[in-house]
Amino acid sequence: MEPTESQATWRCPADALGPGQTVTFDLRARGRTVRGFLVNHDGGHHAYVNRCPHAGTPLDAWPNEFFTEDGRYLICATHGAVFAPDTGICVEGPCPGTRLEPLSVAHRGGELVVTLAP
Figure (cartoon, one colour):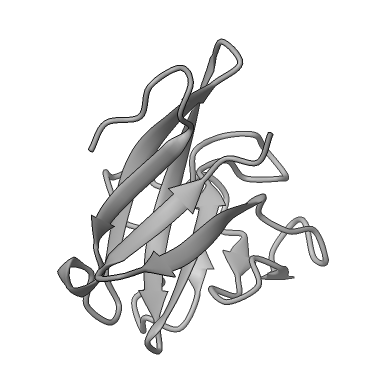
């Protein structure tokens, strides 16, 4: 489902995103578009704005590639900041302690619903 100006949500089937997988999407609200990504890490679903808190650049220099090689962390392809997938907190690199901007994720029936807060 595509988001609309009045509905800043994005949905996908819950079983479409397996462990270690990610997907990107756009949310639109209040005249702006926000690029986000959803990650399945250890069976938990977490969504973030696709913007590094240090450089302001997207994390994925290569489309939809967010995990470190070992699949344990999220990484910014621009300068190597490393983030915990379940909290978005930077654990290594140039911005320790900062965090990715979270987006709300809800399980509704067989769907995952990501929402941009008003």
